[in-house]
Image 1: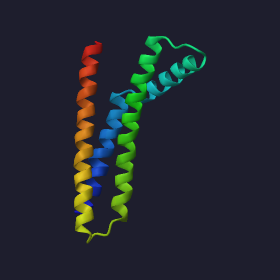
Image 2: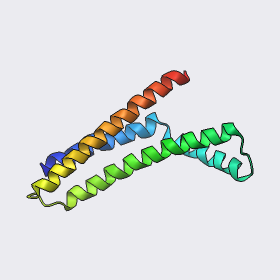
Image 3: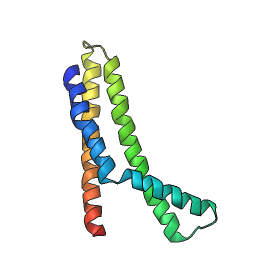
Length: 117
């Protein structure tokens, strides 16, 4: 079970996070967020700027949370003893939840891309 979980994280979740990085254009959004934050710090509190800042913050936070959770799970599974079935079952549940969250974000991103075009 431990091997399967490690394999699933490496071969599925890590790849899905990389896909999200690209799909959500995270690097571009980070740059845009920094630009907007600089505008806000210089006194631009226009509703458009604040709305975009909030949106970018939400997307970046959601991505960072998923990425961090996948990395944490990978580390935790390494520390769990092969015989600790209860712990492994708990990890399996967390892997399933993360997989569902990632799928949800992908669907959300696809729909927002369709709306943007």
